[in-house]
Length: 136
Image (cartoon, rainbow, N blue to C red; front, side, top):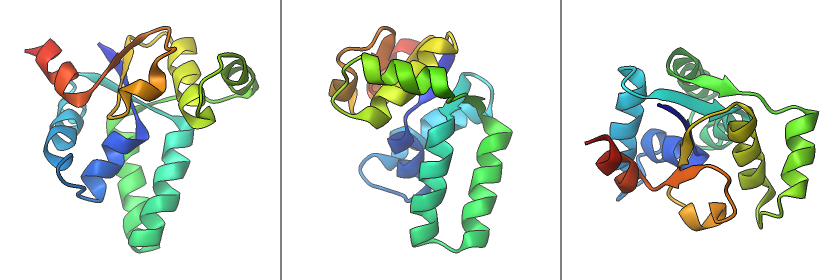
């Protein structure tokens, strides 16, 4: 199954944000073990680097980004994706971009803690708990 991981899932792990850390770490482990074909939006990587670099050293942030490249595929963000994100009327443009990146990459769904932000999604959207239950 090809699943795009929302930015919040990755940040929950690397910033050890509780109470979300456990489920998010398990989801990351599934991608690392190739039990799920994990994807990140290209913009997710820049956002993660920016936020991590505020909390951690540049060296540590770069190592984390490199580790993500080892685990995840990257869904492209290009002019077509950006333009189509403007047309789908999501409240949050970042979520619209992630959705359109996943949609145009023909992914099966998105896993996020903010499911309501994807209420206009054209593909399946799961909370971490819903996705883990689906896999059982």
